[in-house]
Length: 321
Image 1 (spheres, rainbow, N blue to C red):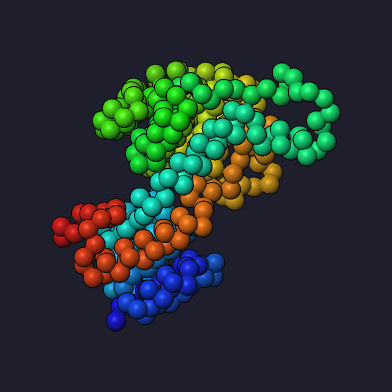
Image 2 (cartoon, rainbow, N blue to C red):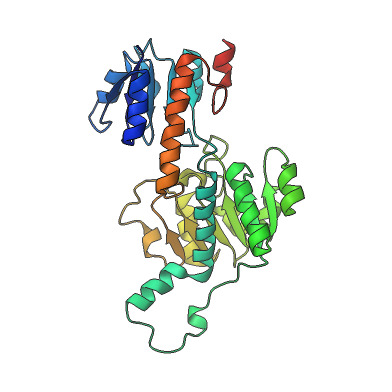
């Protein structure tokens, strides 16, 4: 029987499913060396939120598959896994809609100053009719620029175009004909997107090419009235440059669900800026979606170990070996 290592807490029904197909070992990744030791004689592994380094896989000669409970896979060295012949699976479909909801909540909350003004009311500051000092910005009819129009970006575009009559611009490695036909999205270069968009939304994976994709120069290229939305990965933005831009009024504000360091340190300057909405990486964090992700990841792993997985594979090159 295969041995599976789980390094994240899983729902009871998912644990039961895995136990039906393999010997299951649960590991606390906070214990130094525990996960690497468990992987050495494992056939598969499932988890999330832990960096899996090549060093951790040394001696893991039986390991055939890893399954991450996420769409992102920047916590794995994919090239190293491919060289070792280890399949990496992820969960790209089940979290699309809930993550797009989070993205749009950041757009609305940032534009209408929802968090800031809710705290203002709770603090007893609402003593008369509000005036310009409390006004926000319209979302309806504005221009949304989406950097990375994949599954989640496409779901955001649908909400923007059909729900809020927004003009959608996008950059992507490949054209997205469906978004262009269904939502009127227009593919442009990044420079045009930054200069034209009222909201710049990042929906790209973290790679060597996208690290600090948005830096000081890109922030200066945006409208002063623009809002940056990031629910992809924190390191896609130069956080120090963003803090300066928010302080200096280079851009109007930011809605952030991801950060360079997570959890966000309590002394981060971002927390003292009134024009920032900061969330604790809740992109897919609903009861329904997180359960569906765990189920999907478990099914991916069992199928990968059986040699029958055909979808949700990050490194398909392994199958050709």
